[in-house]
Image 1 (tube, helix red, strand yellow):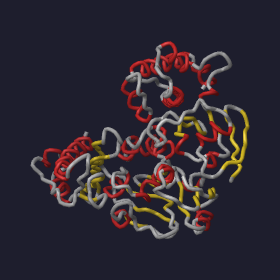
Image 2: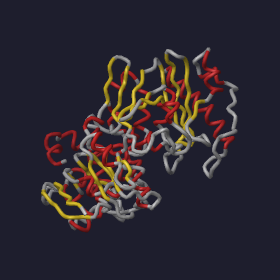
Image 3: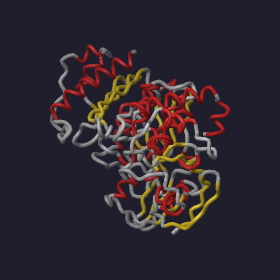
Image 4: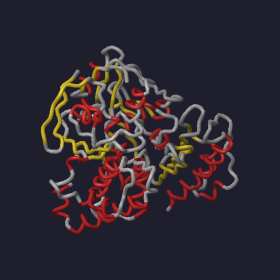
Length: 265
Length: 165
């Protein structure tokens, strides 16, 4: 790792000032950034640590409205009793990220700001129609995620929370790479007031996306059987050493079926 | 450089370290606590697991300065004098190790796992929760046995185990 200057932010306002230092990067759980710095894939001059800012911590549930602070760990999301009641799919998703030690450090804000094409949270937020709140504005999830490791965040903009309305039904199913445990395909289905939405991670050439084919098939009948024979086009899907685009296209339909079955269970 | 000040295994310690110093290197090189190992250095193997503020974390993926102000428990802080912690005793009893390199991380992960599951553990849960700890010798069978046995022992003497953990 190259030399770096560490700053611990006391508040979001403090972090917004510190992030203007040199070529600074925001540090939350560090589960992606620290390994990237160790391998010199990232070399920020300064780090601004957000993880001790209390205003960024915690899950609040009020009726069907859920708000999750950006520095809330995967462990906290996975184990929040109120969230488990209104949106168990999201708690379950959080419990599938990395391993227990990673979940103790990694945060929802860090995950979505990084927007790894195989990360789990982007699929959930896109399917839930979530809003991402920053220190400057509110961004809808469909405008927030922009291709591989890219978001609509501007320089120095800090994610402070995400919020969404818990859907009537939802579930997440992921087919994990057996070594890395990242999603080869992960599908989040949600059936809410505005219909069915289905978001896919791990598979898109351009990151997380909504599957129009699966959504259309489920619109009139939210049942796994409605997906019999539904084909997802392999165009724009990733091909790598783990899986071809055709294989991923088939897996999307399979994982979507499993997710719908789980959501209805 | 920053001043890093920690409570490690019940003792207040401090020292200057470059900001890029990883917690595991601070523990090993500045404090001489070489029980915490560096295995893969890529956050996968879990040989470096310690508890920071009561939670198992990979100390190779955290800067020492990030942990400053926190309470850290390493493998050296588990036993009560000559009395092994119940998880250490169970690893000995069930031969949950061969070369021993992964063992400190396995034991720190196991103590964290047991404290998060006061209701008790089953084999499937133990195996799933060992996702972030790699052992290249044992095939995990005896590690799983040891953790299940320790979980049962600690459930039986909850007050005592809680104190030791």
